[in-house]
Image 1 (spheres, one colour):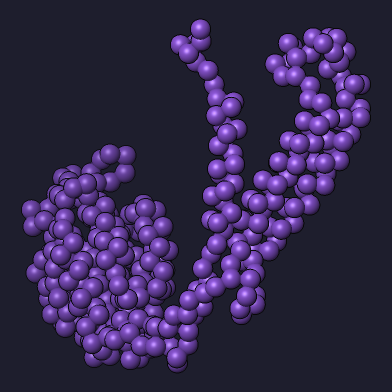
Image 2 (tube, rainbow, N blue to C red):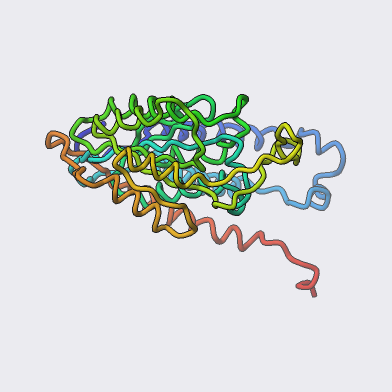
Length: 342
């Protein structure tokens, strides 16, 4: 790609101009041998327009329409090739904060004590984080009995957004909420990021973790400069845990298993991780607060004075006249309704 001057963003589109040659050859051949076409076997030449609903064009009309089509096709191909000739230079920056989201996908997250369910609310909270994010790199780890890295830490929030609808508790075969392994995965992801960045973890869960040495794992991350924020999903009243097939999960006494928001346990984890505990709600205040906390002490920095060249695309200069040129054709061949006749 040239550094300056006129060029095309996708020059391979120009190969589409070669289509004009076979179309012209076909038109010439149909003009020469049209009288022996199979359709001429069914009716005399003067009756064909009544049979087909169209009349035979003479030579001048044929080539006039071909020239119009060729010109319009050429304009559209040049537009698709992406002509451009000027640009704007922007300074490259790297975000100064990294946030790994730990999403609990255990079966208790399907409880409907918050509508439509805890899992749906959690996905919405992550989408709100993406929508409100301004300069924080995000990563996503889903966990239940096993932790899985869904996306590494990235500046492309659209990648996480596109995956969110497919994340549910159905992805898990063995139920349970083992947070420690998820914290280890998050720590590994953050270890690969610049040390001068602010490193944080956001746990989105209903709590109820029973694991040995979980407190020690959180304190170890805190000692490494990683803050743990917690977003609680659910209500203290809780609700029955749904199973498969529309039934609820039953305990040994054949009673539905109840799951409540373990607010005390989640607050304890946030305190150990030198972070903040928030309860999810319908407003954006919780996600805005998380992003603010994640960005604290993390300043965006220039990338060694590197600059990116953003070209100004000019394809619309060709598309607009092409669209205007096609408008008369749409008006000419519009469908006439029975009410407009007579």
